[in-house]
Amino acid sequence: MNAFETTTLTNGLRVVTAPMEHAKSVACFIMIAAGSRYEIPSANGIAHFAEHMFFKGTERRPTARDIAGEIDAIGGEFNAFTGKEYTGYYVKCAAEHRDVALDVLVDMLRNSRFDPEEIEREKGVIIEEMNMYIDTPRDFVDSVYDELLYGDQPLGWDIIGTKETVRAATHDTFLEYLDSWYRAPRMVAGVGGALGDDLVPRLEELLGDVANGSTEEPAEVSWSQAQARVKAHHKESDQAHLRFGVHSYPLEHPDRYALGLLATVLGGGMSSRLFTEVRERRGLAYYIYAHNHAYTDTGTLFAQGGVDIARIDEAIETIVAEFRRIAEKPVAADELEKARNYSKGRLILGLEDPRGLIMFGLRGAVLEGAVREPDDVLDSLDAVTAEDIQRVAQDVIRDDRLNLALIGPFEDAERFEPLLNA
Image (cartoon, rainbow, N blue to C red; front, side):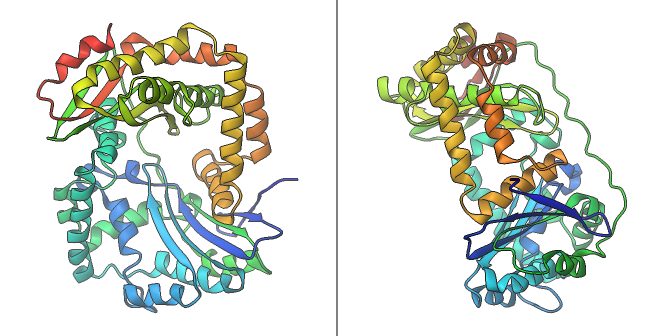
């Protein structure tokens, strides 16, 4: 039995539903197939800024307090998130209040006022959010790494934008961005949990007249690399944060499940290779993990950790050695099964509640154009062999494709390059 059903409204807007028989709550989402990657340089950060402004007031609910008060009155929770390729908004509440949740959510997205005074006030909030982000090396190393990989193109820019572009935003900046991308073909509504009656007709009333019409696609990412590279962001600190990785595969690549298990073997969980070697055996880091992040046309396999500054060379050498080792020698049968069960278990746990389940379906609908069923993913993980993992490792982990981003009290990034080529 499929977990998801997809229907299409008269204007082409898709609706993904995920009923859960025993649920007492409902998660209502609207996701947009557009994020910071869809921005122009002068408006970098507008996707994230718009996310903030949608909560600031509509004609029917003029203030942020009016919006929040209506959700509080039904005991619900609501939030939003902006990525590089999608943006999402949701309300989760008791099932009996579904229609209130949908009405507030759609009102926010369709009727926000973008009041100039509120825009000016929110600029200060976002700049403080930016300062917090820059002052948090564990988070900011992501930006240093992306800039190293992608340079001056949208995937290499910060989602939050720059202080200059945030300060320059006007009412028209928001309207131009929304008019370009917040259209029916790029909008997907999702409802998971206790769906209730007449859901699709209700969504037709609320969203059936969203503007249709084609939208452009963002420029394809371009990158080239012929040697190992290092980028350092100087910050006086007691701990260094690093991200080491390689270019990998896009989201729909046929070897994506082998690549996912490769990342799990390297750094998924507290018994993974990196956690065992870097933290448990050598005491070099408090946290260390590996992950593969895929976009629609590219991807990256990386490890990230917070390490002892005095022993950073040893930490880098140890991480690089673990990447090379997985390419040189097949993963043992028991280690593969552990990684497979870890990945399957994490997937299943993530689908246990309405919000997690519908988010899973929406990511497929927004990024891939079709919803993936959980059972299909589980079957694909079961099909991966040790030979698949080694073949993929040998393809992506190459000496001329190594990248290292660092944050710490370092003046000379070049001094780390020999550690990647050892």
